Length: 216
Image 1 (cartoon, rainbow, N blue to C red):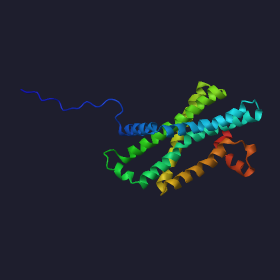
Image 2 (image 1 turned 180 degrees about the horizontal axis):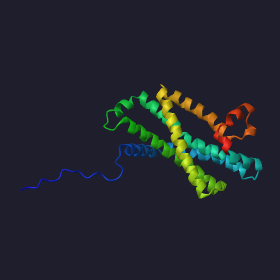
Image 3 (image 1 turned 90 degrees about the horizontal axis):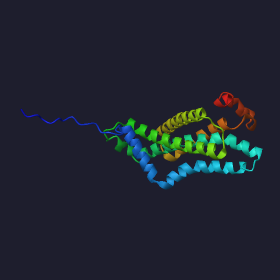
Image 4 (image 1 turned 45 degrees about the horizontal axis):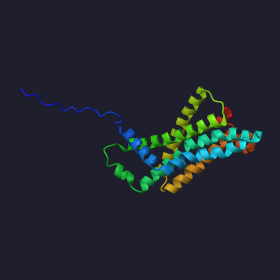
């Protein structure tokens, strides 16, 4: 009796889920553009550097400004990938890329999750670079517990604003409009969360009384 060979295929090793495969593909495509990577990762560091240098003189006002704006710069670096998400999805719709992706065997929702995960990784990488800058160069005192909490906050903030960027892309017809809407939506939120009450008018402090800044 002849034994037929088994037709059961061994599952491939490594990353096999379509969402992760698409995420890795987007990350590789991003890393191939060296200028874009340098600009994306270097811009927040440059902003922080321009604020850090004046504080080296020992001026109390400059050091206070540094401590106040450091969390705001980290926040911007984490949530700005949401801007990329909004403009990318809108541009894909303009260029009919969604129609091409819908022809693949992978559900479109999995591909959208892949784009979101890609931007989360980029945003957290920016935040980690700034955090290392603040700990080792600026000398900000942080315990391991604080570092872990900051990483969790960066993940949650990045996911929230990337979802916000996806919502903007869903209702925007042009990528330029999506970028403007996202930018002008997050800037007031950044100011409300970063600046102390004495620097804000009373009308704004009425709003910030119910925000998370009240509990800092």
